[in-house]
Amino acid sequence: MDAPTQQPSGSDHMVVAADLPDLSPRQAFDYFITPELLARWWPPEADVDARSGGEYVLRWPKMGWALSGRYTAFEPGERLAFTWQWAHRPELPARTVDVRFAPSATGCRVAITHGTYGDSPVEQADRQSHIDGWLHFLGQLRAVTQPVDS
Image (cartoon, rainbow, N blue to C red; front, side, top):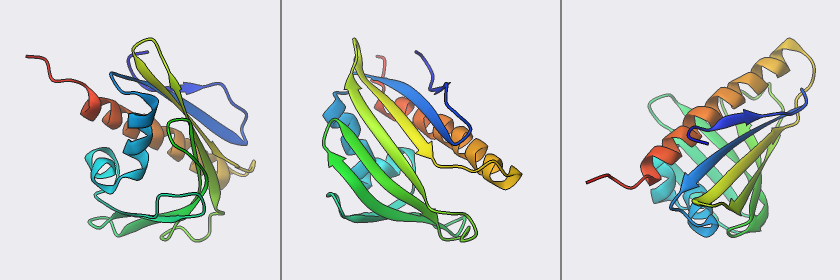
């Protein structure tokens, strides 16, 4: 798999996956919980209480956006799950994200499940925005973790 891909899923959730060559599952996990590493591929600013039950806030100051939640599963190198709520979109329900990390032949495979979504057009539009967002940002993560060719 060269680029992140959408995986089969029902309309109530979405699944995307990416291979991260040259990263162990533990190293990939760290890119989701360490503010300095997060800033390389996702939000410019992050406050993270990296533990089960800990809270996080991710910020995009130029856009005035903040995403926050609580870690519901915290298994370094294996699984990270958290709640997801945008401050600028309070009309949308909180969602859940479950990130799985597994060894692959070249490094690590990351699979993200995001949901739950209803059937309404607003809910399905939010689902599609999350698919698009995760595909983009997993591409960013893959790019920043690739070795530089000499």
